[in-house]
Length: 430
Ligand code: UD1
Image (tube, rainbow, N blue to C red; front, top):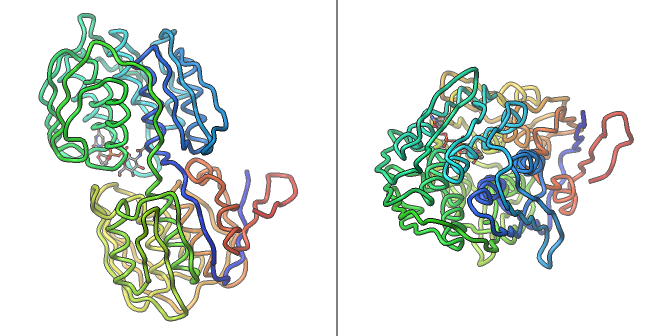
């Protein structure tokens, strides 16, 4: 397993271009199941997660071509016909979002058999809301030996779907399914994340009729068929926030380009409150911090436009060196503080109790060997390491590779000393 070694204490200066959003790209790829025409996705991130999903989609009948376009990586997806309606455990297990093929398969063919995603390192993460949405749309659902069997032999029908709590995945799943259902669907208490708006925009270009994406009420009028289109993946707000926090942690001045500051406004306000200088620009933002110590601030994670749970670990890393005590409340996922004991190995003082972590800022962190436990947790260790004295080696970086494209290269371009130690091979400067 690869590791990443970081030597801390170096200010970051430079420009980091932000990639297309992983969480958007994987839902957009799934949309290719809804049409026999070609869907071309530009501004695609090249990540382990997009590769996992491509493998599953190929199994279902999607022809996937990856190529370099004038503005970066593109993925071209065409599904002349569905060859299989079965998504097996070994492919769904690797990435929970692959569960979202269920609705589109039923919408296009009238049936599907998709493995339940199974447990996950950040809490139970059930799929009851996904299944509730599909049942409302007229699918018959049976659970049997770890698989969901869904059937709608006479097609799906529009319905009113009221989610009892906000779910990004279930909102997207309902959207991906209702676009081909007969009649009108209204989704209430829908998630409002930018990835939902991106998916709705792409589906609309494919011929879907959708109103209200990005608000709590989304209306869809089903159409008989969808066509192909070309769509640029929206910028990755989690990558944006992560590098903004990396710059704040290491100090210096970093400009993030090809992104949108409004996607991370909740984070930027907290960073400013802590004493980081932020400049919002047309195509991104600049983060600046000179030597002085940051102040501790409190955060609580919430659905968008609130503070993103996917930035909670990284913000905790920043708070480990702040002046005072920061309270961090996680309201989206249980068990999402696995980074806390690893940050403690670097010298941080963190007490976790239930859904709350108290971080008492220390004067300095010191490099140590640490272990990545999940995608966002692993990058919080990288952020902490950028400000720690000496060398930190992060083990199990396959978690990082799931969601961060060319991380070593992007940080090294700003002066960070980051290198990848290949399993059994020589180390490489990023
Ligand atoms: C997506 C993101 C993930 C992010 C999360 C919250 C992708 C691939 N992943 O995950 O990075 O952290 O949004 O912003 O886009 N829940 C249920 N029943 C369900 C579905 C969800 O109880 O059927 C619960 C979850 O356990 C969790 C909460 O709802 O406590 C929110 O989860 P959800 O918004 O669905 O997250 P994901 O779509 O899985």
